Image (cartoon, rainbow, N blue to C red; front, side, top):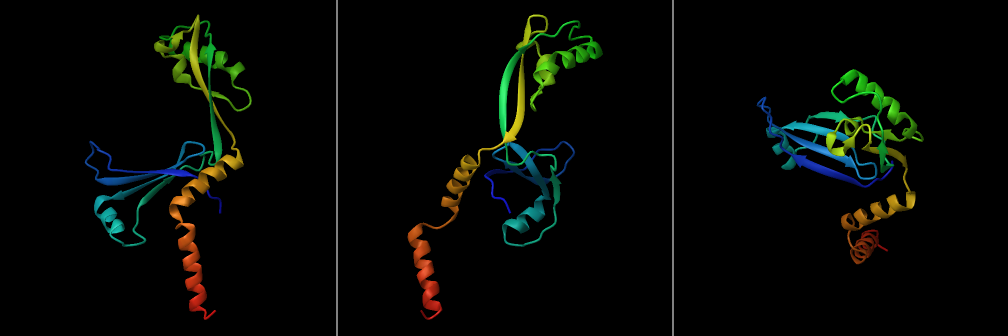
Length: 172
């Protein structure tokens, strides 16, 4: 089993459909990707937090998440020629052509940036965000894991005391 640093969010989404549930999201801290989301009815969530185990819920598991991979980000100025934002199909084709030279070595451009007028004009250059996931630095990940473990595990003197108590129970 691999240990990775993660984030958890527990929330009660407001739904206009009348659904009443609690959402529990688990985010891989290294890749910043959602690994899974649990959805559980309110009454069942109350059972869980009061000690009942193995309560059924719905799990949405992101099997395409680049778990354990480091997220990298960069911004490039991209010139988009031959189409206007309002010519949807033609503009989308022009965006694909303009982004292609930048999408090497795993980089993926944010298509919505290309059509956003706040990020620049297509003919003079649009500021486009690119991201990719690469192998994480194992030492950095281990450092994050150790930091979390220090909060989970009892202090060293308590661990030593517990070990001594185990020795007493064995008659040593």
